Length: 471
Image (cartoon, rainbow, N blue to C red):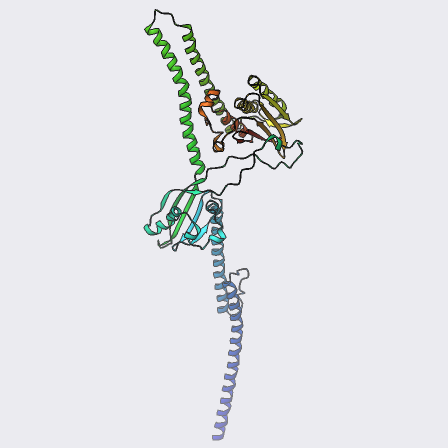
């Protein structure tokens, strides 16, 4: 019986050991299987961590593993959506900043540049690739502009104001464009010399505004600086102020002369009513009134002409027709011929045969009359004036050259402003209103062209009216 019990116990123990061994093998198989699934999920998680959301994790295996895979896939989708939104917002912000005319510079709390748009790079003459992460003291040399960045971090308040920045050095002025430099053949394309353009002022006026950058918790994290170039605005304001002052002065002068002459005649009649007026004195004062009234009439007519041209440009009411240029030049020369004959000045015309231009004939003729009349007016006796018209590339250039006293270089940038004169006394003596060249400029712009001038004291002046060729 004892042996039977021992045998039964041994058999039971063997069964239990076999069962345990099977259980261990089964557990090892399960662990190995789970490890394969977990390794697969781990590799996929590493791929997600690197930002690759293109391939989702396969939700295979037992429910816990499949649930883990589904959770990771949902998290990956949310991360992908948020990253896409961040990239979209960043691109939108970059597009907005790059398309802004205003310059934008952002710095962090340590005054290092963290952002710089293209307008700011142009205004400050900076290279964004070099400037980013540099100190503001290294990036911006102007001390007043640096104050706009540093002061808000110290005081917590933004700064607004204007600063003056030097412009880049202008390119050397090319030599004066004389008749000898003009190509004789209309098909010659080697005439690269463009007439000298009026150089801008030597400084730019920048309107700067700075403000504190704060994070979500309201802590100061840097400064944003916004820059706007108001140089042209200030220049136009200066021109407007000069125009108001000049037009007041120009009108006041003839009115004062008319008033003084009329008062003198009235006083003569009042205090000596019984005596007849001296015909010589009467003729003298009436002549003053007539001349000054004519001058006032000329000023008003020129102002009205400018207003009509500007209104036509704004409303696109100026009709341009492709016509031959030669008859227009001939008509302008004929109008000025009498004055030229009085000073024994010869006017030579050289216009390419069959040259066409898209023009408003009346307006273009007026512009040419103004240029030729000026050339005759300011040229010495027995000299010559040349009018040359030819095609250069896709443009028509009409050049009026004289042998006058020339114009100093400091006057050239403002020569086409209203009422601007290089010599006020001499201009009035010549009978000019100070509006002729301004009318020429506006007529050129109404034709889609431009006007420029080259001059050298003692050599003469060259006015170039450039028009686009008709389509």
